Image 1 (cartoon, rainbow over the protein chains, first blue to last red):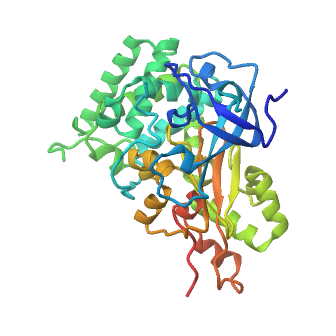
Image 2: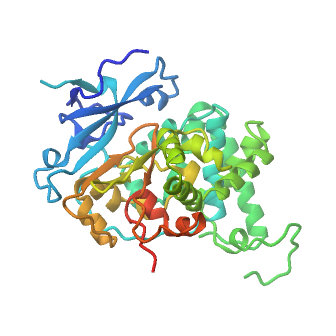
Length: 95
Length: 106
Length: 209
């Protein structure tokens, strides 16, 4: 199974807002982060949620974001980060 | 449009470190859900989707495992694993049994 | 309590028999019975699954951490695959993959599931109510330091806080930093320092004495 993104790639979360079962939190839509790791391949939860088999498996990425870039009013430390597990079809290369 | 369950980053009150010992019926719901997954009848993804479809009110009106069993019930009805009538009938039978044992409705 | 005598063909179970019941409890009972009758699973399956739920607790996670603190080779195996490492200690952590997040002097990890309540149940058992409630799910990602401070845990600004939102199939276990003053302690004593909240990341193990 292939992966579109490698560790260290700069990616942006797609800014689409479909209804239905999605596992990409709204607070990350349109945000850029770094691929920390390829976490494996899993059946697509957006399909499993509706009784379909979710195949072929999709690549899952651990993507790291800088908190100060996610929240305009972030009051923590400048080095703080956040990691979320995101599916390949939700990511595009960031310029 | 942000859906209610997608609550990361939303304003909220203090984190109150409350917890409770799980009642037998709650663990039963958890066990049923695990077995439904293990038997390929219903995935955890369908459970989550079912909970999300209960709507925002469910978070205010129902407890955690009430939301779980509501979702399980709805999904199993959708799939035809149980029918509305047989579920309603069995719930009535269980209630009659429990009342005979001296329990009362909440 | 009922005013008239009635038979108890089964042993008295206070939780089940004395509390008022509601619609959802009726549904839970009815569905369980129907699924057994339809052969989806057996009563024995249900009993064994309930036992497995009760068999797991934060003490299992603490055991893992204590062993990892004392044995660098074991720690490496924990970092590679928590489920396999738990298996070495006779703990069946189940099929859902659990990954360890190592705290260091420069990094403190915190785990949350903003979308629902994903938690390493296979190792730690059922999550506490607060982990699944709105306040934690909403604020842990946005103001982790404030949330930790409310829970009595202060992390210095020089230490990076990394919040992990468990959005997919992986579950996360924080591997806390071994506290100072613990060199002489055996595994049981070390495990006693590792609370459930240390494994979620909302607390750090206390130094003894």
